[in-house]
Image (cartoon, rainbow, N blue to C red; front, side, top):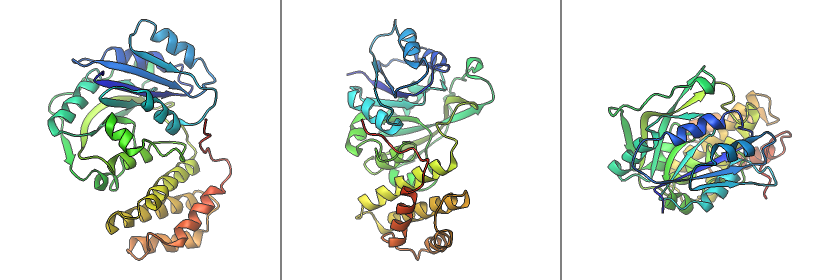
Length: 307
């Protein structure tokens, strides 16, 4: 069993992969690792670049797919192949700090945490010019014994995670009904975790160009709503305060989508939003179900295509 399984979905990252993989090679620390790249039917040279860049590396798996299914499904696919104690989850168009994994492992051990999240730094430099800084040992971290409460506060959505593989499997991984995993993964993990560490350490450096899968605001609002809606409906026995926060997050996503031009009932969304803010909207409200049905009808939204 390796200490670390890097689980890395890939879609059209050919230009960035050499620099990302170099940062994997240069990780400092005493730990063993395997590398699992899951290609989501890239239309560029990502597969050829992956093969060339990892040809002399050991413990590498490159998974080819014949269908584009989206990052949530592909992340789960890779995690199912992993054997490490921890999963290291990053986007492949970034550059890791040279001691990123050692830092995250140290935090996990120090606090007996099964979820550790690091920060990211966006830079105007193109990826071939990024010089990721070494993480200093005096960084601050916050420790949460109520991981779900933390995630239901200000969101943690960047893919800069170290999580126990057992936790990932116990939580069921990403919500495969939602295309992008950024919101669903921390939410589902937190519901089963014992301890979350939110570190101030900058573990990855992100070029401004090409750092987002989708710049479609409606897509982002859709995925956010669906993430919280599914979780709310699947967990009827959560504490009332948690269910109220989930309902508010649903309505907030609907409000932003309506603001940005989505075909949602604007007046009802506004009413529901202010009612939720006042604590007067039931998490079981049929109005939230109505917003779900409206989101489901929005055209030009990427929804997962199951293999």
